[in-house]
Length: 82
Picture 1 (cartoon, rainbow, N blue to C red):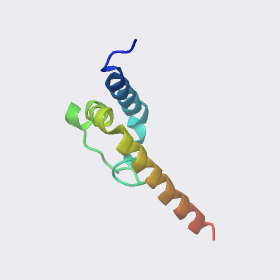
Picture 2 (spheres, rainbow, N blue to C red; picture 1 turned 45 degrees about the vertical axis):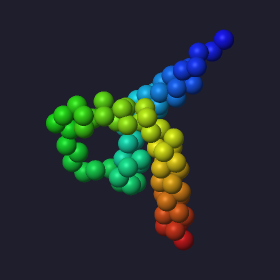
Picture 3 (spheres, rainbow, N blue to C red; picture 1 turned 135 degrees about the vertical axis):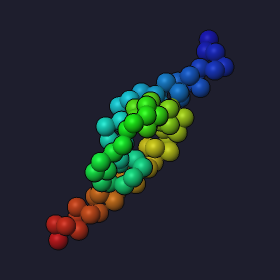
């Protein structure tokens, strides 16, 4: 029998895995389809740890944001081929 917190654990675990898997592509989730030219990462909170923490709790929103960015990139690519 499943514990009453099992769904919460799965949600958080999936979010942490999502954050680890998407760290190298995080520019597609927040800053638009371009990578920052000179990213500052002096503190661990500006890097991988912060990204995983955000994704752990907000991964459904991040998925929707990535879908929107993919749509924008698709439209740009389609317009550039005309």
